[in-house]
Image (cartoon, rainbow, N blue to C red; front, side, top):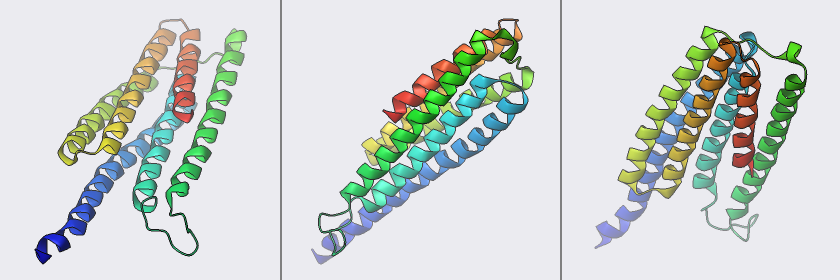
Length: 206
């Protein structure tokens, strides 16, 4: 009987390690994709890809929040935190939400400003399109990987994070359409795609 009692924390600890592993894999992909999309978006003149890069990095921020909350929010109360550590999660969430909302407003403002002056619109090329397609494929793979782990571990938090990855794949599909449209001579479509992605970032923020 004593053995069963001792085993429960070990099982919880193993589960946390598994959640952490899956979240870290997703986080590494988000970091690499985010940097790639921001660099290529800037050099290839695609506002939509640049916005999508910010979206990937916002995913990375939520990955960190998931890990941080999982580790600290459920710790016991102590002398410095007599009401426990639950508020850490709330404060971190509010800060992240406000930051994402401000980023989204900035992207929207820039895209709408460019739409009002056709000379400012970008003309992205094949490289921007390839990076956007790579993003769609990568995020779908991460979605499948995370959702399988979520089912195995019966983790609602991982399930939510999996859908977060799929939302990034959807925003990359919007970018593919925007960049392809701009390559066909409809330059405003890249800016329109940037606004759509900015709205998705704002939604995460809220």
